[in-house]
Amino acid sequence: RFWELPWSFSSILKSKWPIFSLLDAASSLLQRPGGCFQGEVLEKFLDTFWSGIYIPSHVSIDLLLNESAASCIEARASALLSLADNQRYSPLSPTGVQGNRYYRSTAMPKVEQPSEEDSDRLVARAEQMLRSSSKEKKWDFLTRPWPVWRLLDRVGNAEVVNVTTGRGQFFWMYVFPHRVRSDGIISNRIRGRREGYCLQQFQDEAVRRFEALQKQTGHGPARPLRLIEAGPHLGDCLLWAAAVFGADSRKSKEQLKVRSTAIEPVDQVVDRFRRSILANNFDIDLRHAWLGEKSRDLGPDKTPWVALDDIIPRDDGDVDIFKIHTNGGERAILDGAKTLFSTRKVHVVLVHSAEDHQLWGSAAFLLDRGYTLTINGKPIAKKDEALVKKWVKEKGGLQLHALHPDAQ
Image 1 (cartoon, rainbow, N blue to C red):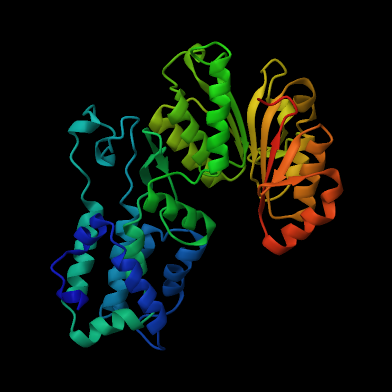
Image 2 (cartoon, helix red, strand yellow; image 1 turned 120 degrees about the vertical axis):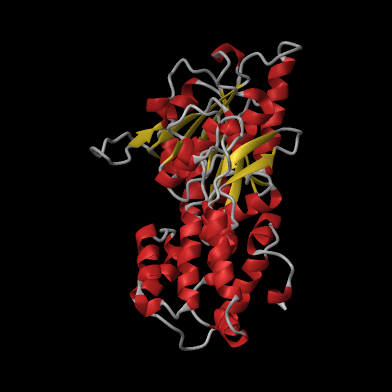
């Protein structure tokens, strides 16, 4: 029935309907032994979906030129689709216009450049190859290991998404162009919902603190909203805040309504976050580092360890929200910010952790400084260590919310 549909592969991809994802799911259930041209090359094509390492173009070209693979339609189609996957990305300008990479050495404005056709043409060649096969062979495309449908599905996964803040603003986000593992699952959620993966509690507290700053003057905020995030992932929350409150890098520092600092150690995540910052002309201070109790330089080409106290100036002023979601080391991050907590107000602290000793360690740090704490909405006191650790073991990751004693 699929082959009788009146739509081309490209039109299905552009429609965003997950037809190829469904076919891939069906294929995984229908797999049976056998198939053509198996071995090391096939393993590379299968591993790409778990390692995140794309197939080098020369591997696909070698496969297409290999006479031994000439009769293996699914292998050759997979090679074409892998090439299409490698050719589908174009740089996004701050205006949201995609440029043509073949015109990057010319003076022609991006708005006047023709669209690239490489990916569409390669998908069309693969489609022609698959459609011209016999009925029996088409069944093999579902039951044999070459990942034709998974490659088609990935080709349709946008790398850059225009998302909404839910408050009337929109901004661009670079995400991972696949659906596997946590990075892919979250990226897929962003693509599907067109909204960032930002904790609602963060959004609510940001609005509350911004309004509190406005009340101090009766018109604009007394100072910019100050945000710090450890482990921002793709930058969902800080991009959201920049879009909602205003952090245009083309304006002077005095005109900014929000100032943000982000610390993220993972290269690929930093790369996507940085692209999003540039695409939106946002002013966000993004640091590529591990955050901990003490600063340590590990040498050339190594991601350094930094303590928050070493990168936030002492005269920087109060912090409205300090958010931590690092999948480990949360207490050390707080210990590296002791000067910040002792010399300025940190109005709201949000910590997510799935480790009982880290969550309680963070809670103890904040309780010792007079903060009012809740975990998943339930009040926490110094006597609740055993209870908190029990919750983590039973439920996994939990969200800690802390308010400064003088918080408004």
